[in-house]
Length: 458
Image 1 (cartoon, rainbow, N blue to C red):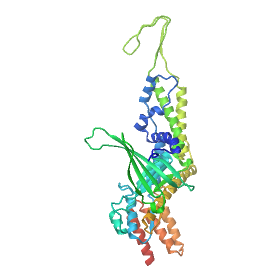
Image 2 (cartoon, one colour; image 1 turned 90 degrees about the vertical axis):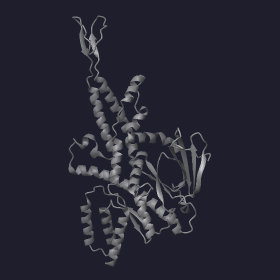
Image 3 (cartoon, rainbow, N blue to C red; image 1 turned 45 degrees about the horizontal axis):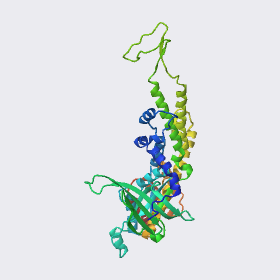
């Protein structure tokens, strides 16, 4: 309890970076409110000028759009769950879990889509497996099912909320500490909002929850054994990517440079619209110049306006275009990056090769998501002891119009008369589940059972 507020050294080192990456992803008012941390201030720039530049700041958010494109394209077709076994209660539970995995109405696809965004922004995201707290100890499995105590659900956490941890030699968690903050009122009549901070500690068998309300001391509010205690493992699952596939880490500094250059160019162009009058005269000048005034010049006096020639503006504009292209290039989207996507002629083979790189990156993300889903669902199955076999497929094809080619491939395979009923079952089930990828998991499971029974009868 004394050390619950401590933070891991790696967390402390990355805390400010995560905040910057989240601002760069969100953009809009979130970035504008923190623009003083990112907009470079010139040497000896007056406070009034810098303040005016901050008030006019704008942000062209390429990195956020790229991350959203990847997350939406990856889940264009939903992952397919393969649940094998004769435990009907267990099958119904996992069907219900796929349709509402967090007890808030989110299906498994929507839940993981948000976690993928979090992973691409901060490098990792976390999923906690939790079970409802039982009101009393269940006598048997039927009573446990009836009370809802075995209804596992998932809780999403960001990298900024997992503040302390320790790992064993294999890289598995020995224990973790998760910190969350919220604003709350004791009642609608209360005058002020208070900040409540919670720390959730999990080790391989137990959990403890601590709370601190603003102005009070830390207190322990809950403790006990968690749902994966019988597996002797921490119920937190990490989903992360390598440095090369961490998109915001690759594009963040480029996006920040583009932000400063574009704002500097925008400010210079705005100032250039307000031309300054210039008087060429040998006598003292005391007249006021403006739209509603006139000036009187001597025979040898001259009047003009200053205006920049614009060479540096052209250079800055070209540099901004190059930065935009570079942001797309490092994110493996060369075909969508700036001028190369519209002006530079490319052959069909070249376009196919460029998009093939993007597809390989999408498949790598798909493998990461499938591995996470398998680890989470298999841990839940082991804790519930349903005796089922769970596998996950999909997330490897990203063109919704290519089902005809899958159908032709399946016809070719089936026409070979491979002497394996199991092979024919798997081909039929994969075709059906791919074509009906957006229906409820319960219907997918029912179709798979009917295919099994139909081929067994044949």
